[in-house]
Length: 309
Image (tube, rainbow, N blue to C red; front, top):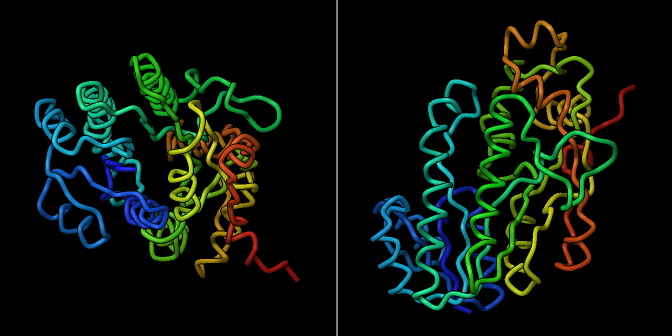
């Protein structure tokens, strides 16, 4: 199958290119700069330059490649996972996701594309008991950033599903961890935790769903042959913030994280940080394991964590 990836220079790009090639797919990557072009070429994909926000350029690129499938991994996330940098990147990230998605969808029909895979979220489900399956709604009534992000993903999925003539798969990823992600010993969160800048907020009962970047890439490649629909691409270990943060700190050689009462955290870190720490709902991966043969590795920090004496 001939596959075009939009957003291949992001964290998932290199492992995704490798997985697709291992499955004997021909891989082209849509990039917007010569630097990104070199990055994807070194990973083994054929680059085609077009800004995702330029509808005409996207149309021409997709028509030239004429792929069998398009994988949309478009983001514009900052290098550092801090409130200031996330806020500064928010508008560009929103535009890249919404307008980039619209431009890709508009280009599919004329190029004869029939399969469309879309990056979505497996960690912004509405709060409730137990783990959320794919039928649960997104948290559109959460904290400000969570509400905005939830509406955005719902909009992306709806726009794709309303496009006639294509089979759409929404890949609802958990939080990425592993090489080239924020959540690694060398990544930005590893450094923040070593500086004790990331506290357990309140009881830290918000449940986070994770996925190793390599496992996310493998599931994405497998989804090219799946039935249309949404799939939670998360591992088997959804865990509360107080659990994963302590294990992560130990794994990256950091002291135990500090604790901050919820009321103080709202003032110090804002409502979004408090929501993440106290209200996130974990996701169930039964569908992906059944239909994609998804076999995620255990969350590495928990596997490596040493029991307290």
